[in-house]
Image (cartoon, each protein chain N blue to C red):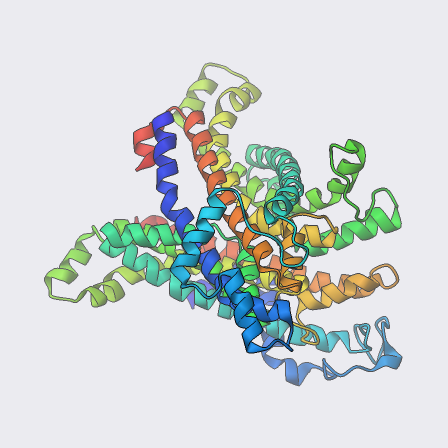
Length: 275
Length: 318
């Protein structure tokens, strides 16, 4: 809690933006003035007005409502994808680092193999099998991010397992599982927290990118990526549409990265003290 | 160096095997119904069985994998289901576009990042440093596809300086080729320049605190000679590795810019493959790009070893 305040003090504006996006995502159904999916053709492609605060899209749908629901998809994508990456990566990293030997070799090769697939490429593979959907995009992003978490975890476990408190835990009769959980895991947390905050930004960036390519959210789902993809066709006559969506997305990512920086700066002295 | 290279190449075999199995399995699962794709929904079961037999789809998976690998090792990635073209040549010509884009993007990103990184490191802690690092962070955060759209809007629609799309091979018309590549490469380069500039800055700051830099200063060298002759060179060694690690991200980013700027690269090829359920094409792109990425990483490691005499071949391979 104390470090959360430290992060806020370092980046008050960015933290506020991130919290705002989170809140919009959670409360989208309450906050949105209109249904984001119901077309209203007479009002198509309007600029901001008293009726439509941020204007309308090519089907006359309220952009503000769609942006709010887009925040919901972005928040979901960030949390689910990074959740998958963290669960898989931490497990692999702990096992590889702690047990070493052949298991380490095998897992490391698997991680390297996985790393050879950039997110978009992996998303192409997964879409080819399962078909396009925003959940498959989240899965692809999550799997593609596993190597980051696996490598960081393994990197911390390797020196930590030589420490005396780990040995003490084993000598006292703790099982491998308990030693990993109680003695080794806590040492990994600072590094994982930093990676977590940057990964969220990347996951949201990738989700919008995949949705833009048609490999993620499908219309009429209001992902920021799909919105930009349809805004593209009206860019010449109605640049406002592209600008408002693009700026929302970019501001979210910038804010998340700034918060990531602040998290790192807050946590890094702790990291330095540990090793 | 030779022994190191061989060792690295041997080490990569299991990784390539993992990649090939993943690629094969994923598309093999779906190719089971390639018969029904070819024949349409009205196919009789007998006819479907016949087609499966002809395509070799009724054999067990391991047999099909070995057969497929045998062909791949001979450079045969099969034929496109859609238009019967050889996938090897399709991927080959698409790869040229993607690689050109990546090379141009790296050039742009490298030069920009070097400039930003050095200036920020020299005046670290000042407002210039903070300003440049904020710019770098914004550069990384702005989605490549949106930046691409904005660039098209400004340079092609508003000012009409550059074509919004339309690829011409370099060998046909170098000027038209570069004109078509400037915007996509810039959009892609911005994505890399941010993290690269941050990395160069911190690497340089670290180097400036080493004892040999203090010695060089004590000898009475000017600050710019210290920078050029001593600090920069050493700070750039880890940067090479860092830049190499970003190539995977660039490959993914290139897929996006190719779609935005309608370039006939690997990304467009793979996406069309998905639209048409053309699995040999998807398989070909995925296999070639993934293996290419692994090999590029080995190349980067070798450059690293060549640049830094402190790393001996034995320790760096462990």
